[in-house]
Length: 178
Image (cartoon, rainbow, N blue to C red):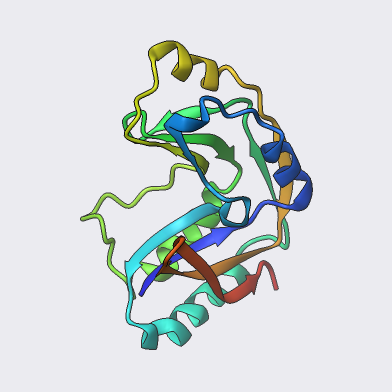
């Protein structure tokens, strides 16, 4: 099954994101609020039997981190992946992503062929087949979006196909710190 390690925004941050006016709606496929997250590491296809060992490695990594890490979004939106993914840049989680990477790379090789790296972001939408005009793209990146929240855990998440797209299931929540 596909897995990744992620943190989830708090309710106040989700409120800020929900208030964004992401137009034109026909050209964007919005990510459902229940799926808003910041990926610390994408693991790819992982044998489900490896879950307990991954959790142990993540617990060891989390113990080396502070109890809480401030995370900040913004100050606006940006395009990622060749103007296909509309996202909010995320800062503050570089150390957590590095710890997760160091703990999990010996167990799960990099699924994208040695290009492991963290680019903090929270995906809001993806473009559809209907193309956005350059002014529409610019208008979206002109939207202000600033929020912050404290991260006190990260999750090992399974991404499973469903009739409504991918469904995320937290397999384990790992608290930060001792």
